[in-house]
Length: 161
Length: 161
DNA sequence: CACAATTTAGTTGTGCACAATCAAATGCCG
DNA sequence: CGGCATTTGATTGTGCACAACTAAATTGTG
Image 1 (cartoon, rainbow over the protein chains, first blue to last red):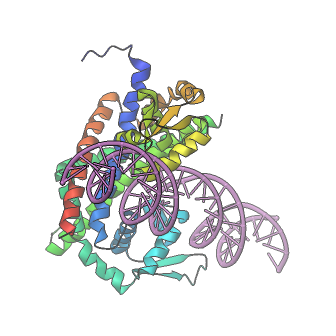
Image 2 (spheres, each protein chain N blue to C red; image 1 turned 45 degrees about the horizontal axis):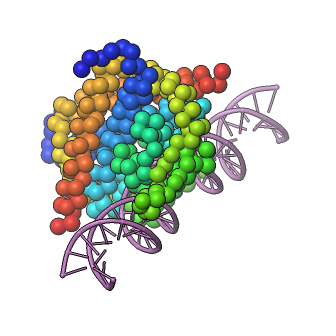
Image 3 (cartoon, each protein chain N blue to C red; image 1 turned 135 degrees about the horizontal axis):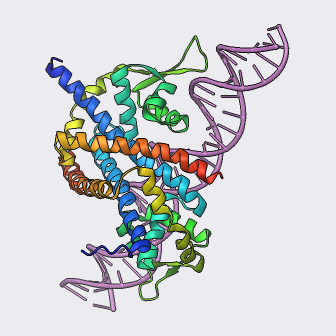
Protein backbone atom coordinates (compact mmCIF):
# COMPACT_ATOMS: atom_id res chain seq x y z
CA UNK A 1 0.00 0.00 0.00
CA UNK A 2 2.85 2.41 -0.46
CA UNK A 3 1.48 5.62 -1.85
CA UNK A 4 4.45 7.22 -3.40
CA UNK A 5 3.64 10.84 -4.22
CA UNK A 6 5.24 10.32 -7.61
CA UNK A 7 2.53 8.09 -9.05
CA UNK A 8 0.62 11.23 -9.80
CA UNK A 9 -0.56 11.91 -13.33
CA UNK A 10 -1.85 8.53 -14.43
CA UNK A 11 -3.32 7.90 -10.99
CA UNK A 12 -5.16 11.16 -11.06
CA UNK A 13 -6.96 9.99 -14.11
CA UNK A 14 -7.71 6.69 -12.43
CA UNK A 15 -8.91 8.27 -9.21
CA UNK A 16 -11.00 10.69 -11.13
CA UNK A 17 -12.61 7.90 -13.01
CA UNK A 18 -13.55 6.28 -9.77
CA UNK A 19 -15.12 9.37 -8.30
CA UNK A 20 -17.18 10.60 -11.19
CA UNK A 21 -17.94 7.09 -12.26
CA UNK A 22 -19.19 6.13 -8.78
CA UNK A 23 -21.67 8.94 -8.76
CA UNK A 24 -22.70 8.26 -12.31
CA UNK A 25 -23.21 4.59 -11.52
CA UNK A 26 -25.05 5.27 -8.27
CA UNK A 27 -27.36 7.68 -10.00
CA UNK A 28 -28.19 5.19 -12.72
CA UNK A 29 -28.58 2.37 -10.21
CA UNK A 30 -31.03 4.51 -8.21
CA UNK A 31 -32.82 5.30 -11.40
CA UNK A 32 -33.05 1.61 -12.18
CA UNK A 33 -34.69 0.75 -8.87
CA UNK A 34 -37.16 3.61 -9.18
CA UNK A 35 -37.94 2.50 -12.71
CA UNK A 36 -38.89 -0.94 -11.49
CA UNK A 37 -40.83 0.25 -8.45
CA UNK A 38 -42.64 3.04 -10.30
CA UNK A 39 -43.60 0.84 -13.20
CA UNK A 40 -46.73 -0.23 -11.29
CA UNK A 41 -47.77 3.40 -11.04
CA UNK A 42 -47.05 4.10 -14.68
CA UNK A 43 -44.60 6.85 -13.74
CA UNK A 44 -41.01 7.55 -14.66
CA UNK A 45 -38.63 8.83 -12.03
CA UNK A 46 -38.78 12.53 -13.01
CA UNK A 47 -42.55 12.27 -13.37
CA UNK A 48 -42.66 10.87 -9.84
CA UNK A 49 -40.66 13.88 -8.62
CA UNK A 50 -43.22 16.22 -10.18
CA UNK A 51 -46.10 14.32 -8.61
CA UNK A 52 -44.39 14.39 -5.20
CA UNK A 53 -44.15 18.17 -5.37
CA UNK A 54 -47.78 18.49 -6.44
CA UNK A 55 -49.00 16.13 -3.70
CA UNK A 56 -47.01 18.07 -1.16
CA UNK A 57 -47.75 21.62 -2.24
CA UNK A 58 -50.88 21.47 -4.34
CA UNK A 59 -51.33 23.10 -7.72
CA UNK A 60 -48.40 25.14 -8.97
CA UNK A 61 -47.40 27.14 -12.03
CA UNK A 62 -44.83 25.44 -14.26
CA UNK A 63 -42.34 28.08 -13.25
CA UNK A 64 -42.53 27.12 -9.56
CA UNK A 65 -42.30 23.43 -10.41
CA UNK A 66 -39.13 24.12 -12.33
CA UNK A 67 -37.62 26.03 -9.44
CA UNK A 68 -38.36 23.27 -6.96
CA UNK A 69 -36.95 20.54 -9.19
CA UNK A 70 -34.33 22.63 -10.99
CA UNK A 71 -35.74 21.65 -14.34
CA UNK A 72 -36.19 24.05 -17.20
CA UNK A 73 -39.20 24.29 -19.46
CA UNK A 74 -37.50 22.26 -22.16
CA UNK A 75 -37.69 19.29 -19.82
CA UNK A 76 -40.90 20.15 -17.98
CA UNK A 77 -43.15 21.07 -20.89
CA UNK A 78 -43.20 17.67 -22.56
CA UNK A 79 -43.07 15.89 -19.20
CA UNK A 80 -46.17 17.68 -17.91
CA UNK A 81 -47.91 17.04 -21.20
CA UNK A 82 -47.29 13.34 -20.77
CA UNK A 83 -48.73 13.51 -17.25
CA UNK A 84 -51.72 15.30 -18.74
CA UNK A 85 -52.08 12.64 -21.42
CA UNK A 86 -52.05 10.05 -18.63
CA UNK A 87 -54.93 11.90 -16.97
CA UNK A 88 -53.01 12.74 -13.79
CA UNK A 89 -52.89 16.52 -14.19
CA UNK A 90 -54.54 19.33 -16.09
CA UNK A 91 -52.88 22.48 -17.37
CA UNK A 92 -54.71 25.76 -17.05
CA UNK A 93 -53.56 29.10 -18.28
CA UNK A 94 -53.83 31.67 -15.52
CA UNK A 95 -56.43 34.42 -15.95
CA UNK A 96 -54.54 37.22 -14.22
CA UNK A 97 -51.29 36.47 -16.05
CA UNK A 98 -51.82 34.88 -19.41
CA UNK A 99 -48.16 33.87 -19.61
CA UNK A 100 -48.46 31.56 -16.60
CA UNK A 101 -49.70 27.96 -16.77
CA UNK A 102 -50.88 26.24 -13.60
CA UNK A 103 -50.50 22.47 -13.24
CA UNK A 104 -53.47 21.01 -11.37
CA UNK A 105 -53.96 17.51 -10.00
CA UNK A 106 -56.95 15.64 -11.35
CA UNK A 107 -58.95 13.29 -9.14
CA UNK A 108 -56.99 10.44 -10.67
CA UNK A 109 -53.72 12.21 -9.94
CA UNK A 110 -54.69 12.80 -6.33
CA UNK A 111 -55.82 9.20 -5.96
CA UNK A 112 -52.50 7.91 -7.22
CA UNK A 113 -50.88 9.23 -4.06
CA UNK A 114 -52.37 6.35 -2.09
CA UNK A 115 -50.58 3.83 -4.24
CA UNK A 116 -47.36 5.86 -4.05
CA UNK A 117 -47.18 5.64 -0.28
CA UNK A 118 -45.43 2.29 -0.41
CA UNK A 119 -42.73 3.51 -2.77
CA UNK A 120 -40.37 5.17 -0.25
CA UNK A 121 -40.20 2.10 1.95
CA UNK A 122 -39.39 -0.15 -0.98
CA UNK A 123 -36.67 2.23 -2.12
CA UNK A 124 -35.28 2.60 1.37
CA UNK A 125 -35.09 -1.15 1.77
CA UNK A 126 -33.38 -1.40 -1.61
CA UNK A 127 -30.55 0.85 -0.53
CA UNK A 128 -29.58 -1.40 2.35
CA UNK A 129 -28.97 1.79 4.32
CA UNK A 130 -30.61 2.70 7.60
CA UNK A 131 -32.17 6.08 8.33
CA UNK A 132 -29.03 7.55 9.87
CA UNK A 133 -26.88 6.53 6.92
CA UNK A 134 -29.39 7.96 4.50
CA UNK A 135 -29.55 11.23 6.37
CA UNK A 136 -25.77 11.37 6.36
CA UNK A 137 -25.52 10.64 2.66
CA UNK A 138 -28.23 13.19 2.03
CA UNK A 139 -26.24 15.86 3.87
CA UNK A 140 -23.04 15.03 2.00
CA UNK A 141 -24.73 15.07 -1.36
CA UNK A 142 -26.36 18.42 -0.67
CA UNK A 143 -23.04 19.89 0.39
CA UNK A 144 -21.48 18.45 -2.75
CA UNK A 145 -24.20 19.88 -4.96
CA UNK A 146 -23.85 23.34 -3.47
CA UNK A 147 -20.10 23.29 -4.00
CA UNK A 148 -20.42 21.96 -7.53
CA UNK A 149 -23.03 24.51 -8.52
CA UNK A 150 -20.81 27.32 -7.28
CA UNK A 151 -17.81 25.80 -9.04
CA UNK A 152 -19.65 25.41 -12.32
CA UNK A 153 -20.14 29.17 -12.39
CA UNK A 154 -16.49 29.79 -11.47
CA UNK A 155 -15.17 27.35 -14.05
CA UNK A 156 -17.44 28.84 -16.68
CA UNK A 157 -15.99 32.25 -15.90
CA UNK A 158 -12.47 30.77 -16.04
CA UNK A 159 -12.95 29.39 -19.52
CA UNK A 160 -14.37 32.68 -20.71
CA UNK A 161 -10.95 34.30 -20.05
CA UNK B 1 -45.07 17.12 16.25
CA UNK B 2 -47.62 14.43 16.96
CA UNK B 3 -47.07 11.68 14.50
CA UNK B 4 -50.41 10.20 13.62
CA UNK B 5 -50.07 7.34 11.13
CA UNK B 6 -51.33 9.61 8.37
CA UNK B 7 -48.59 12.13 9.06
CA UNK B 8 -46.03 9.40 9.09
CA UNK B 9 -47.00 8.34 5.61
CA UNK B 10 -46.82 11.90 4.33
CA UNK B 11 -43.43 12.25 6.00
CA UNK B 12 -42.15 9.22 4.16
CA UNK B 13 -43.10 10.77 0.87
CA UNK B 14 -41.47 14.04 1.82
CA UNK B 15 -38.32 12.23 2.89
CA UNK B 16 -38.27 10.28 -0.33
CA UNK B 17 -38.52 13.48 -2.28
CA UNK B 18 -35.56 14.87 -0.40
CA UNK B 19 -33.42 11.80 -0.87
CA UNK B 20 -34.04 10.91 -4.43
CA UNK B 21 -33.87 14.56 -5.26
CA UNK B 22 -30.47 15.03 -3.63
CA UNK B 23 -28.96 12.20 -5.57
CA UNK B 24 -30.57 13.39 -8.77
CA UNK B 25 -29.39 16.93 -8.11
CA UNK B 26 -25.85 15.86 -7.20
CA UNK B 27 -25.58 13.83 -10.34
CA UNK B 28 -26.72 16.71 -12.50
CA UNK B 29 -24.51 19.16 -10.65
CA UNK B 30 -21.51 16.92 -11.29
CA UNK B 31 -22.54 16.65 -14.87
CA UNK B 32 -22.72 20.42 -15.11
CA UNK B 33 -19.17 20.92 -13.85
CA UNK B 34 -17.83 18.25 -16.18
CA UNK B 35 -19.70 19.83 -19.06
CA UNK B 36 -17.94 23.12 -18.47
CA UNK B 37 -14.50 21.63 -17.87
CA UNK B 38 -14.69 19.17 -20.77
CA UNK B 39 -15.93 21.77 -23.21
CA UNK B 40 -12.30 22.71 -23.94
CA UNK B 41 -11.60 19.11 -24.94
CA UNK B 42 -14.71 18.85 -27.07
CA UNK B 43 -15.94 15.89 -25.03
CA UNK B 44 -19.16 15.16 -23.22
CA UNK B 45 -19.06 13.47 -19.85
CA UNK B 46 -19.89 9.94 -21.07
CA UNK B 47 -17.46 10.39 -23.97
CA UNK B 48 -14.80 11.35 -21.42
CA UNK B 49 -15.53 8.14 -19.50
CA UNK B 50 -14.97 6.12 -22.66
CA UNK B 51 -11.71 7.90 -23.38
CA UNK B 52 -10.52 7.28 -19.80
CA UNK B 53 -11.02 3.57 -20.22
CA UNK B 54 -9.23 3.55 -23.57
CA UNK B 55 -6.30 5.59 -22.24
CA UNK B 56 -5.97 3.25 -19.30
CA UNK B 57 -6.48 -0.10 -20.98
CA UNK B 58 -5.77 0.46 -24.64
CA UNK B 59 -7.94 -0.69 -27.52
CA UNK B 60 -11.01 -2.67 -26.52
CA UNK B 61 -14.00 -4.32 -28.16
CA UNK B 62 -17.28 -2.44 -27.71
CA UNK B 63 -18.48 -5.28 -25.50
CA UNK B 64 -15.65 -4.78 -22.99
CA UNK B 65 -16.20 -1.02 -22.99
CA UNK B 66 -19.83 -1.60 -22.15
CA UNK B 67 -18.96 -3.91 -19.28
CA UNK B 68 -16.52 -1.44 -17.75
CA UNK B 69 -18.92 1.47 -18.01
CA UNK B 70 -22.14 -0.50 -17.63
CA UNK B 71 -23.48 0.93 -20.85
CA UNK B 72 -25.32 -1.09 -23.45
CA UNK B 73 -24.83 -0.95 -27.20
CA UNK B 74 -27.80 1.35 -27.64
CA UNK B 75 -25.84 4.03 -25.81
CA UNK B 76 -22.33 3.06 -26.89
CA UNK B 77 -22.84 2.60 -30.62
CA UNK B 78 -23.81 6.19 -31.45
CA UNK B 79 -21.42 7.55 -28.81
CA UNK B 80 -18.43 5.75 -30.31
CA UNK B 81 -19.50 6.86 -33.76
CA UNK B 82 -19.40 10.47 -32.58
CA UNK B 83 -15.92 9.89 -31.17
CA UNK B 84 -14.96 8.43 -34.55
CA UNK B 85 -16.44 11.43 -36.36
CA UNK B 86 -14.33 13.65 -34.07
CA UNK B 87 -11.24 11.72 -35.17
CA UNK B 88 -10.41 10.41 -31.71
CA UNK B 89 -11.00 6.71 -32.34
CA UNK B 90 -11.36 4.22 -35.16
CA UNK B 91 -13.61 1.17 -35.25
CA UNK B 92 -12.30 -2.08 -36.68
CA UNK B 93 -14.17 -5.30 -37.07
CA UNK B 94 -12.18 -8.17 -35.63
CA UNK B 95 -10.83 -10.78 -38.04
CA UNK B 96 -11.07 -13.82 -35.77
CA UNK B 97 -14.58 -12.94 -34.63
CA UNK B 98 -16.54 -10.99 -37.19
CA UNK B 99 -19.18 -10.07 -34.59
CA UNK B 100 -16.71 -8.10 -32.52
CA UNK B 101 -15.76 -4.46 -33.16
CA UNK B 102 -12.58 -3.08 -31.62
CA UNK B 103 -12.38 0.58 -30.68
CA UNK B 104 -8.87 1.93 -31.31
CA UNK B 105 -7.35 5.24 -30.28
CA UNK B 106 -6.08 7.40 -33.13
CA UNK B 107 -2.97 9.54 -32.72
CA UNK B 108 -5.24 12.46 -32.06
CA UNK B 109 -7.16 10.49 -29.44
CA UNK B 110 -3.96 9.48 -27.69
CA UNK B 111 -2.68 13.05 -27.79
CA UNK B 112 -5.84 14.34 -26.14
CA UNK B 113 -4.84 12.56 -22.95
CA UNK B 114 -2.22 15.22 -22.28
CA UNK B 115 -4.84 17.91 -22.19
CA UNK B 116 -7.11 15.74 -20.05
CA UNK B 117 -4.57 15.49 -17.24
CA UNK B 118 -5.69 18.77 -15.71
CA UNK B 119 -9.34 17.75 -15.60
CA UNK B 120 -9.29 15.68 -12.39
CA UNK B 121 -7.70 18.43 -10.36
CA UNK B 122 -10.22 21.00 -11.54
CA UNK B 123 -13.07 18.65 -10.71
CA UNK B 124 -11.61 17.79 -7.33
CA UNK B 125 -11.27 21.43 -6.46
CA UNK B 126 -14.84 22.01 -7.57
CA UNK B 127 -16.21 19.51 -5.09
CA UNK B 128 -14.74 21.34 -2.12
CA UNK B 129 -14.00 17.90 -0.65
CA UNK B 130 -10.58 16.69 0.45
CA UNK B 131 -9.11 13.33 -0.54
CA UNK B 132 -10.38 11.51 2.52
CA UNK B 133 -13.92 12.78 2.08
CA UNK B 134 -13.88 11.79 -1.56
CA UNK B 135 -12.61 8.32 -0.74
CA UNK B 136 -15.33 7.99 1.88
CA UNK B 137 -18.07 9.17 -0.46
CA UNK B 138 -16.71 6.88 -3.13
CA UNK B 139 -16.97 3.88 -0.80
CA UNK B 140 -20.51 4.77 0.24
CA UNK B 141 -21.66 5.24 -3.34
CA UNK B 142 -20.16 1.94 -4.43
CA UNK B 143 -21.86 0.16 -1.54
CA UNK B 144 -25.10 1.89 -2.47
CA UNK B 145 -24.78 0.90 -6.11
CA UNK B 146 -24.14 -2.72 -5.26
CA UNK B 147 -27.18 -2.82 -2.98
CA UNK B 148 -29.37 -1.06 -5.51
CA UNK B 149 -28.35 -3.33 -8.36
CA UNK B 150 -29.19 -6.39 -6.28
CA UNK B 151 -32.48 -4.84 -5.20
CA UNK B 152 -33.48 -3.94 -8.75
CA UNK B 153 -33.35 -7.62 -9.63
CA UNK B 154 -35.32 -8.56 -6.51
CA UNK B 155 -37.95 -5.88 -7.06
CA UNK B 156 -38.26 -6.87 -10.70
CA UNK B 157 -38.93 -10.45 -9.58
CA UNK B 158 -41.45 -9.16 -7.00
CA UNK B 159 -43.50 -7.32 -9.61
CA UNK B 160 -43.48 -10.36 -11.88
CA UNK B 161 -45.52 -12.24 -9.25
C1' DC C 1 -22.95 -32.09 -40.57
C1' DA C 2 -27.49 -29.79 -39.13
C1' DC C 3 -29.71 -27.03 -36.01
C1' DA C 4 -30.61 -24.59 -31.83
C1' DA C 5 -28.72 -21.48 -28.41
C1' DT C 6 -25.59 -17.87 -27.44
C1' DT C 7 -22.84 -13.86 -28.31
C1' DT C 8 -22.03 -9.28 -30.19
C1' DA C 9 -23.44 -5.10 -32.55
C1' DG C 10 -26.66 -2.33 -34.45
C1' DT C 11 -31.37 -0.10 -34.91
C1' DT C 12 -35.60 1.95 -33.36
C1' DG C 13 -38.47 4.24 -30.18
C1' DT C 14 -39.41 6.67 -25.78
C1' DG C 15 -38.10 9.71 -22.34
C1' DC C 16 -34.95 13.02 -19.88
C1' DA C 17 -31.21 17.09 -19.71
C1' DC C 18 -29.94 21.19 -21.38
C1' DA C 19 -28.68 25.06 -24.61
C1' DA C 20 -30.49 28.30 -27.76
C1' DT C 21 -34.13 30.65 -29.60
C1' DC C 22 -38.79 32.41 -30.20
C1' DA C 23 -43.29 34.45 -28.99
C1' DA C 24 -46.61 36.45 -26.19
C1' DA C 25 -47.92 38.96 -22.16
C1' DT C 26 -46.67 42.07 -18.65
C1' DG C 27 -44.57 45.95 -16.43
C1' DC C 28 -41.88 50.01 -16.37
C1' DC C 29 -40.17 54.51 -17.74
C1' DG C 30 -39.96 58.65 -20.01
C1' DC D 1 -49.57 56.73 -24.32
C1' DG D 2 -45.45 54.38 -26.85
C1' DG D 3 -41.63 51.63 -26.73
C1' DC D 4 -38.53 48.50 -24.53
C1' DA D 5 -36.87 45.16 -21.12
C1' DT D 6 -38.47 41.32 -18.41
C1' DT D 7 -41.03 37.26 -17.44
C1' DT D 8 -43.01 32.82 -18.71
C1' DG D 9 -43.71 28.96 -21.63
C1' DA D 10 -42.96 26.59 -25.68
C1' DT D 11 -40.05 24.79 -29.41
C1' DT D 12 -35.97 22.86 -31.63
C1' DG D 13 -31.81 20.35 -31.75
C1' DT D 14 -28.14 17.42 -29.68
C1' DG D 15 -26.83 13.90 -26.73
C1' DC D 16 -27.47 10.17 -23.22
C1' DA D 17 -30.19 5.93 -20.93
C1' DC D 18 -32.54 2.04 -21.67
C1' DA D 19 -35.90 -1.42 -23.52
C1' DA D 20 -37.12 -4.22 -27.35
C1' DC D 21 -35.94 -6.02 -31.48
C1' DT D 22 -33.02 -7.48 -35.54
C1' DA D 23 -28.96 -9.43 -37.83
C1' DA D 24 -24.94 -11.95 -38.25
C1' DA D 25 -21.43 -14.86 -36.58
C1' DT D 26 -20.02 -18.37 -33.40
C1' DT D 27 -20.52 -22.29 -30.36
C1' DG D 28 -22.48 -26.43 -28.65
C1' DT D 29 -25.08 -30.71 -29.24
C1' DG D 30 -27.14 -34.62 -31.23
